[in-house]
Amino acid sequence: MRATNRHPFRCLAPADEIISMSGTVCSNPVKTPLFNGSYRIMFMVKEAWTDKGIFEACGIVNVLIPAALLESYYPGKLYSPVSAWASNGLFIENGRKLRLSISSVSHGPESFFLASSGRELGWEGNGLTGRIIRFRGLCRLQFKRLMYSWGNAGGLLLALLSGSREYTEKSVSDAFRASGLSHILALSGMHLGLFGSIARFFGRKASGRTLGNALQLGAVCFFVYFAGMSPSLFRAFLAALILYIASLLRMNRPDSLALLSTCFIIHLIFFPEHSGESAFMLSYASLGGIIIFGRMFRKVYPVFIPRKLRLSIADSSAAQLATAPVSLRFFGSLAPQGIIAAVFVSPVVFLFLYAGLFACIICLFLPFLSGPISAIMNMLYFVIKNLVIFFSFE
Image 1 (cartoon, rainbow, N blue to C red):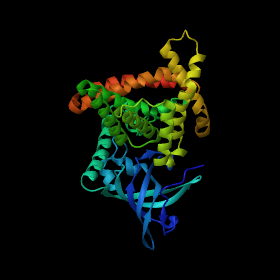
Image 2: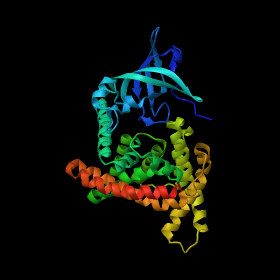
Image 3: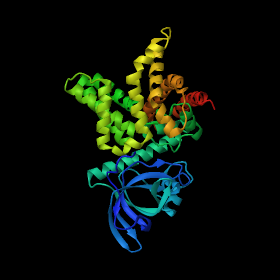
Image 4: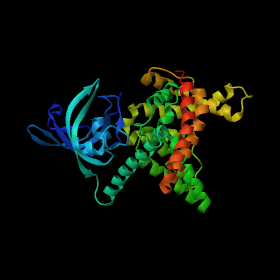
């Protein structure tokens, strides 16, 4: 059962007669297998055109953008900047205003609008707001260019830090899923905690606990804004926000299950449409499983196993148990080897993330070091790739 759409598309013109619409992009483009690898965006419609004239419209619709239109600005793709202008290529990011030539299409039970061409109409918001939205979009594009220069390592780091998987090797992406480690590629609390912990560390070193907590929340907000509001990332953001408020008010740290339940309720209030997505279900199920079943699994595994290793395996087992129904429903298979795979792969991915973050900062000030840094990052990537492929049993 799907949640009710809070912003249904409304227009006096029939959907199958609409040939063009204008509005604002309200999500990051996401690569899909539909229509030869098109990109899916959420589009808030303002006006619609038919052969009979212009109609006012409102609501949010799913629009598929052909790769040739959107990737024309991406580095390393088959569409050069010259051909981008010739083919009316589009720079699409959250907050971009567009007019699109579209047609109504269906794929199974879902309906979409498929764009064939378009025109850019600026950015949402006036003054400072518009500049901030534009700056975010340009930063994401420049980040793609830097990551492309790092080869396959940059493709993985791009997926981990911004949620964009255009440059991730398909074999590696498939291996993550087959080995039960697809949650690592999803933006979540692990990635949010990385930014928050670094900012908190430097803040506490500089001026104590209060500033450290404030910088941690600021870093978390920046990362969420830059990467986009995915279900798992919003869940992690809510938890970080509640914990910060509790710390600011000198309250006791909330119980883990109560904290997760509170995040779940608030999440459904703000984004009820997330409830039907696999990322939402996997995010809450995995954490709920760790909280509810983690203690039980810690007693199951033998005490001669080193404590940290035993805790890691127990938490991984609890998460696998809780997410098994969701995995069967969406992916049609289970990957129990993920229990052990996570123990080996997660620490290397943490190291890769930390190294990548500091490498980006270094390249910002010393761009001539990009070559050596790329070599180091690709060595770490080689380790991750082979570990994941090994546990995928392919």
